Length: 435
Image (cartoon, rainbow, N blue to C red; front, side, top):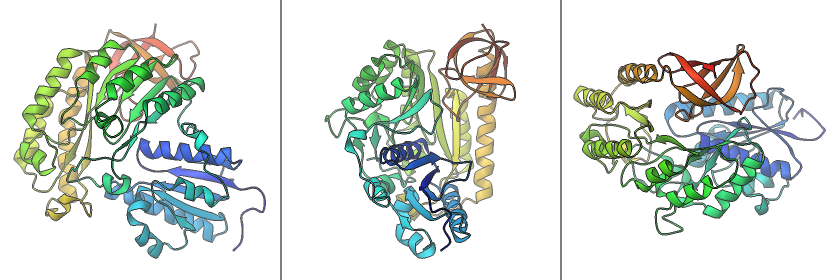
C-alpha cells in the first residue's frame, strides 16, 4: 500500500451524531495527546494520515451519513491519501459484524466503550489519571459535561440502550473535578448531558441525586452558566426546579423531550406518562419559575399515528406554548419493540406532518420572541459572522436554539458576557443593541 507519510502519525477524529458522541471524541483525543500522538478534530488542513470516525446509529438518516463518511475515507485510503481508517461509536457498536463484512477495508471497528482497545492500535496506554481531561472540539468558552452513560428506559422507538447499555452515573466528585478543570481552561458555560438526566444517581447513590450534583457544580468558582439537557418527564423530581430557582448560575432552561401528546401515541411509545400528567408537570414548573424556558423534542409519523393524533399534538403545542421545539420523523429501528409494528406511514407523509407541526411552533416562537423586544438580556458572545457578533441568552443552547444578533461598534471578545437590548424579533432569532 502506498503510504501518505513515513513521518510522525497525525490522527483526525471525525464526530457524527449527538453531543454525547462529541464528548467521547474529546476524551479519546485527550488520551491520544497524552500519549504524544498528534491529534486534531475535523481537520481542514488534510495533513493527517489516520482517521477515526465516531459514528452515530440513532436513526436511519444518521446511519446513512455515518456509512457514507466511512466509504469516503476508505476511498481516500485506497488512493493513498490515508494510511489507516478506524471506526468507533454507536453504529459500530450495533452493526459491527455487518460492517466488517460489508466494508472490510476499515482497519478496525470498535464499540462505544472500547477506548483502551482503540489506544492499543497506537501502542498507547489508557491513562486513568486523565479521566475528566479532554481536548475540546467546541469553542473554549463552553463545553458539554456527560454525567452518565446509557439508559434504563424502555421507550419503544429507541435503540440507545442497545448501543450504550444500562444507565451508569459518574460520581459527583469526578464531575466537579472535571468542571473545575474545564473552567480553569476558560469554559464559562457547561451543558449537562445524558440519555436521561433525572435518573442520575439511582445506580450509585440509590436515589435521584441530580439536585445535589447541581448544587455542587453551582459552587464551582468561575462557572457562569449551567444548562440542563434531556430530562425525562415521567417521575420528574421537582427538586431540580427548586435548585434552578435558588442558584443564579443555573440557567432557567430545561430540555425535556416529550415525543408526543396523544395518549394513544404516548402509550405505544412506552413513555410512562399521559398528556394530562405532562400538562400538570409543565404547569408546576412554570408556577415555580415563571421565566423558565422549556424546550422539547417530538416525533412525527410513529406507527399508527392518525390525523387526529397530529391535530392533538398541534393543540398541545398551542396550549403549552413551548419556547423551543425540535422534531424528528420516526425511524423504524431493528430490535426495538416498535419494530414489531407496521411502519405504515410513508417518508413523504412523515416529513409533511413534521413540517405542519413546526409551522404551528413557528408562530408561537415568533410571538414569544416579540415579547422580548425592549428587554435587556445577558448574552454570551459565541462568534463573529459576516461582520456581526452572534450570541445566546440563558434561554438558548448551542446550535439547536435561537441566536442573538448583536449590533455593536465596539470590539467584543468571543466568550464574554454582554448586556443587549432587544430591538427586533424573527421567527427563531433576536437582534439587539449593545448596552
